[in-house]
Structure formats: structure tokens, C-alpha cells
Image 1 (tube, rainbow, N blue to C red):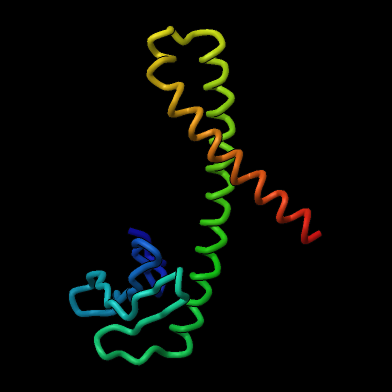
Image 2: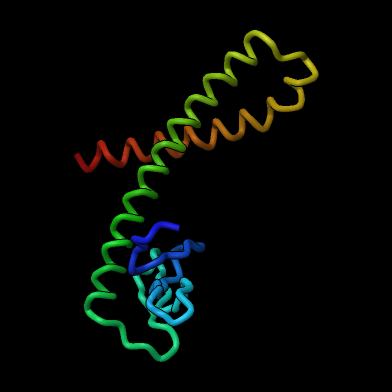
Length: 133
């Protein structure tokens, strides 16, 4: 392992992370992780653990991580949508050129309902934006 370990380690979990202090300054020269907090990104909460009082540095680093993590997740959301568009295009090509009647029978109703639902929500959201703008 590298000699330059970070001071904080964030174990990702649903809606946030468990936050640990990384300790390499012990007699056994082992890496020890001391949990100091739990973060909930959805609620913006930081809960100290083990009766610990977080230092200003702890709070600063946790808040920095929260900002970076939210930005990363937002980028991933857009990337997922762009991939969904690609999948829709490849699905269209598959329907047009390769799908058998049996395969089409298996997926047509589900695809039509999903596309109808998506179209309905997109049209409503676009109308809302136009009304506000």
C-alpha cells in the first residue's frame, strides 16, 4: 500500500457513507479505521459516532466529500439517461431489423407502456417549464 494514505476514508453506502479516520501511527504499524460519523446525503445529515465530537477539520472534510459526491452522482444520472437513449435507439434498430414475431409479442406491450409513461411525464414537465418561462 502507498505510504501517502488519506486522513479520511468514506465507505459508500445507501444514501451516504460511513466516515473513518485512517490511523497508521500505531505500534503495530497497521492501518486502523476509526469510525467517526455517518453521512446521509439525502437529508444532508452528519451524525457523529461513538460519542465523538467532530472537529472543525472533520466537518470541513465531510462537507467537502458531500459536495463532491453529490456532483459525481448528478453526472452519473445524466450519463445513465444518455445510455438509456442509446438503448432506445438500439432497441428501435433491433425491432426494425432483427426481432422475430415471437420476440416482439413478448416485449411490445411492456415497451409501449413504458414509452407512454415516459412521454406523458416528459410532456407534462415540458409544459410546466414553458408555463414558468
